[in-house]
Length: 190
Image (cartoon, rainbow, N blue to C red; front, side, top):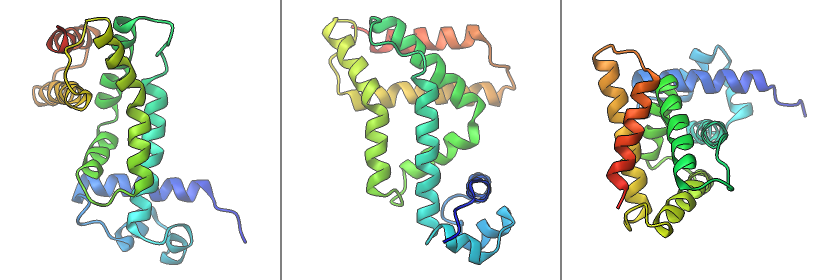
């Protein structure tokens, strides 16, 4: 059996990402992906059995990549606040600079297309954030509210702020990130 070509997989992933930004998940077909990736249908089906498999492959790839980037400065030896700011800043930068990727991830999270493996990976990715929030609660810094609500609130705050920046054509600055992180932390603090 011929080994899989990582460049073809990447082209298929990139085409899927672009198409979802353009037409959404519902309009996505194997044929459209193949055409956009400039690969034949035989090649597409050699690598993936269905559009759901492509979506989950891309979803998992992006989740792993983003988790590495978001948690890069997470340090178990640090207290709550430095780790919160490190994760917040990285997540904010990622959301701002990888708009199409986050749009894709959000589309997938709201769809029934995610496989059990993708859902489990999502839980693994959020495990460090859950641990951090639990530490904040134990240190009497963070409100004793369900972590899913806290994470949803924080993510929504970041995405709303970025949407507002884009709408007004404002450039992202370090001052923006620091102000947004302080606002979000103040909102979840006791």
